[in-house]
Length: 411
Image (cartoon, rainbow, N blue to C red; front, top):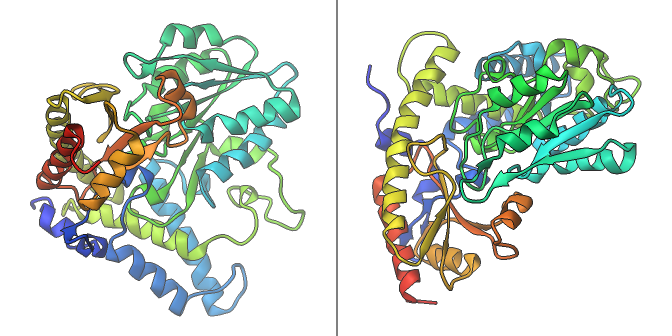
């Protein structure tokens, strides 16, 4: 059966009906959080109206909540290609990473070191820097190349040693769109006996994760970047979750994955996040397992996204005042572009485009070290991300707005 048309996809998103200054809104802010299809909000409302309860008690709504959480773990196990018992839920990726860092630090041998990279979002840098401050765990940093927006692999190898206990690495840059060869990094890290903690937040919306194929020992992502509500999801290898000692309350569950989950979870958010993944699978209109359908959906959406990025890159690069950053089309990258306009602040560009109904983000996107290495602090970059609902016409509108900015119109 044919894949869902762009019109069918767009009809699922009430946000796309919004008008701003007489313009229909084009959402290019997906790297900071995508819009939500009706299937997600309906699942949240249904849970809150008909099943809302706390867990592990014998009355019906509590049993139904247990079942809903178990189902959500199974959905994310299919999404990440792992076991349901390896899925941990939390407030967001940053909170989960801070929590996991404390658990991991308790297992580190004397003299242990952590390796991070300049390319990463600070959610996968600063939790490990906190260990350096609180637990005297040295942190070594891998350089990035400002010219290519990629890691310096020679420097990566230099930072590894027999003392390396963990490598924290991003699978894709949320600012530049760079997709990093995580498997290469994991093989190098495992060769010296280190664990690998992967920030998959920007990767998961664009590449269907396979945590084993990536070589990840732990992998964190954020469903609100792929059409779900605000939530964090952490995969941890079951043998690790069984032996690590996370901060937790004495009466709390002692078995994984619950031993990593503090307090009462955001049940409605978890239900909604699972609904978002299942919605993605419906786009393929194929039979088969949830994983099979997700693979079909990601393949088709990836092909659409590549065309949009080609269109956006070629059009923006034709504007003399625009400078693009990160890998060009044809190299491993996501559907997210970063650029600057000569003589214009990133905030002024974003404001001008917003007035035209084109919503982009600007700044450093918490990838502060990377933006510093590009020499763009404090102003940062303009970021435009394509999502499943983005059209070629919306890309044209964005480019037309940037052309006006470059000419000095309206600013």
